[in-house]
Length: 104
Image (cartoon, rainbow, N blue to C red; front, side):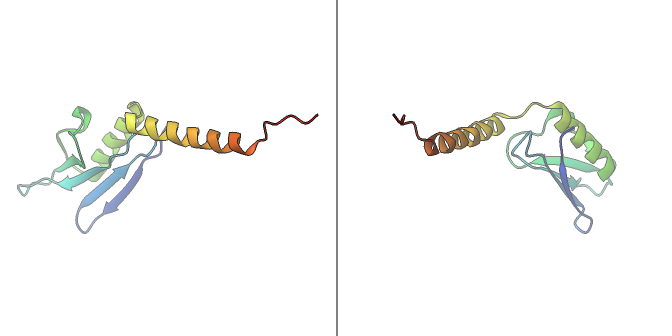
């Protein structure tokens, strides 16, 4: 199970969900326009995933759907790229500190 960080602001009735293990973009839950008591998921860039499109009746229902979505999704290309760069830099640093000269 992946760790999803939820930040809920009850005054503005918004929730921000982040999962750095699976995606770099944050999901934001806002109150639906129109005066009804529904909540919708929005993304910073791109489209809202089909699993999260639609309306939710409470923060808890949206939170459950977001947790399920992050647990079922594969890591994005950006996350793979960052992990590869981090691993490459670490290997480069470790290999550069070892002496390759042989003593006689």
